[in-house]
Length: 143
Image (cartoon, rainbow, N blue to C red; front, side):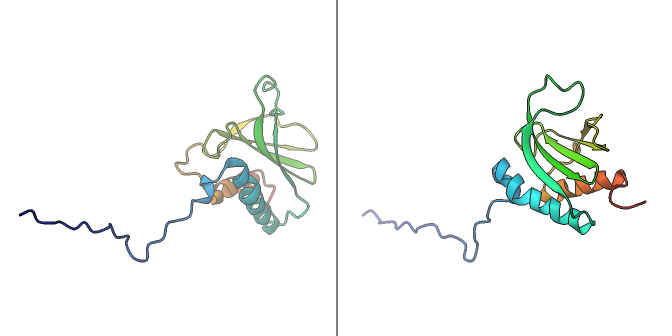
C-alpha cells in the first residue's frame, strides 16, 4: 500500500513585513525632486541660507573645455553672489558625480570629483557632501 503524503504549504514567518524600497532605489528624477532637493534646502536653511534658489536641470556643464560633452543632470544652488552645482554624469545617483562652485556671477572654473570613494550613496551622504564642500569654501561659517 502506498502511503499518502500530505504537503503542507510553506509558512511565512510571523510578523515579518517586506521592507519598503530604500529612498535611494527610487527612480532618479523622483529621488532628486522629492527627497534630495527638499533635504538639501532644509539643511542649508539650518545653516542660515534662506534666499536659496535650488533647481534640478539637464544641461551642458558650464566649464571651459566641457562644451563638447553631453548634457547631464545638475542640481544648481544660487544665493547672494554664490553658486554651486552637483553634476550627475549618468542618470543615477550611484554613477559618476562632480561638483563646482563660483562667486560673483562668474562661471565655475574647475570640475571636481564628488563623493567618489564612497561605497554606498545615501540621501544623507549626498546632502552632507554639499555642506562639506560649501563649508570648505567658508560659505557656511568662518573656520
